[in-house]
Length: 166
Image (cartoon, rainbow, N blue to C red):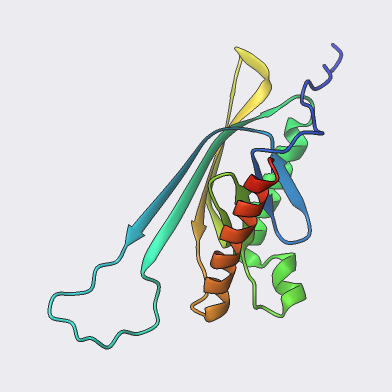
């Protein structure tokens, strides 16, 4: 049996990009994106003085497919990137630890300091050239002004991309 050629058109803009700052992994066939933000409520009777801690937790879930003969290479790249998000990325090494997690670029949001919480792959006999995948990423920013500035800058980048007609 010959390996079929991929029908993906790699010249198009991917649905999502996950990067460690050096190596980008494009995800062309993302079928669903979910962003969950859980806000922390202060204890009843707490004082007005607040410590610098995260006020909310963000979890982003991407559901999609890896298609064609390249699906195993993309699977391996995603697994490697998931491990790097826990141990330290290339971006952390180059920035001296100022940036530590993965970068996620989607039509919904652009986030830095992401870590892979779970990675699931499914295969079925009905779709032989496809691996279904679900990636859950958690936003783990360092409490600093730089993290907030990056969040604000991502809004500008997103608006610029929309204005240029991605």
